[in-house]
Amino acid sequence: MPVESANNRSLGFSVITNVQIIEGRARPPKGRPAIRDSLGIRLGLILVAILFLAVFVLVPLIVVFTEALKKGLGVYFASLTEPAALSAIELTLFVAAIAVPANLFFGVAAAWAIAKFDFPGKSLLITLIDLPFAVSPVIAGLIYILIFGAQGWLGPFLQEHDIKIVFAVPGIVLATIFVTFPFVARELIPLMQAQGSEEEQAALSLGASGWQTFWRVTLPNVRWGLLYGVLLCNARAMGEFGAVSVVSGHIRGLTNTIPLHVEILYNEYKFSAAFAVASLLALLSLVTLLIKSIATWNVSASAQLREPSTGK
Amino acid sequence: MKIEAKDLVRTFGDYLALDKVSLKTEDGELVALLGPSGSGKTTLLRIIAGLDFPDSGNVVFDDQDSTGLKIQKRRVGFVFQNYALFRHMTVYKNIAFGLEVAPGSRRLSRAQIRDRVFELLGLIQLPSLEGRFPAQLSGGQRQRVALARALAIEPRILLLDEPFGTLDAMVRKELRLWVKELQRRLKITTLFVTHDQDEALEIADRIVVMNNGRVEQIGTPAAVCDEPASPFVWEFLRGHAIY
Image: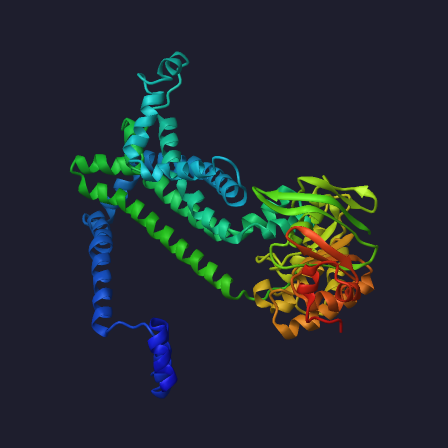
């Protein structure tokens, strides 16, 4: 191939691929992708990944459940139904029931503003949204002690009016909201940015108001991402330890959440009870992952083809 | 309805997108905004639609100044370059959207909406695809659904942004003749943006040739071809002829 070799000299790199293509035609490749590592490397990588997951995820999960059930189902359920445990479960559900809707609202609002509009201070807002991820949860808790604590900025005022925030339920709610703020917003921002605002503009041109556009176009388009964000937010809200630990005060039956209750039980050498309560959190994360997988499956399914359905 | 633009100026930062652009259409005319990319034709279309607002100048609909009118009040049918169909809605729901969001006093009954949607589906010759989602349609079908969705609100004018831009050559030719015929039948004043000379020459009643945010010439296809008003128009249309 004289032409090819001439090109090869003059154009160098780019033509080398050209030559390979032509050689490829002469010797047809056996149906395989162009990029392929040797069998050994592939097996090795897969093995490392599986081993890592087994040691760091699977084994601890199994340990939680075996330890929890070690002394039998009786002890297991007794540890879950004793008053202190029940009150911890109740408080955790209560806190999540406030923190998750609050962050659903804030997260959607922030994501909408960031993805669809340009305004001064936008990059600052993006940075602030990430702050709770960047900051240690202990510091997140301390912030609230410094503001609302007896020695804090608002301490004297709060004492005068007999309002308790830290070492009480409101402090736990505040700390949880702070720590879980980024989940919904972080999930939605890239999704909304990728979708652009053309569909919204189309809705407006068809006479829809801003609200109608939001409820009928913007929100339905991000519903699976939103569900995932809410799930992660919820899992963290129920499982948060650090920030809540600082503001809680660990008052049994009053300001103990599930993670704090687990710690107390563990420190009191009540291992079976500790693991039993911990297994609740483990179950929560398993359910979260399950729903998340269904959501992801739905997203990819709807991205490819949707089942035709009747237009009502 | 007649559309008039008076001395429209629009800047994006330092960039002058529209430099005192004026034009006037007759009722029921099909007008092409023709020019290379960056000439300001899409900006002009978006300002007429109410999707963007000029720094100065006026948009006039039938002798009524509409420069500050909100897009919802303009009753313009806008077809986006990528169609912007609602991806989570069926074809039926897409077309019905403008009818369903109308305020209570003006909203049609469900049965009336249904009749209107099926009428439009007939008009775009896709009578049995109402249950499909946009992802299940071909490019040409999406384009027609976008057109039906825009027509559902009985717009006073129709604005098309590069309506055939993403279609392959065969479908393009077929569809542009179909759009032309439809526009004739509905007698609706229509503005469409294109960078394709042949497209403009083939179907437009008049052509607005734009370059660098300015109008170079406004005239019938014959006029811009035979009597170019500037070297740019001559250069831009060289080698293209009316069919």
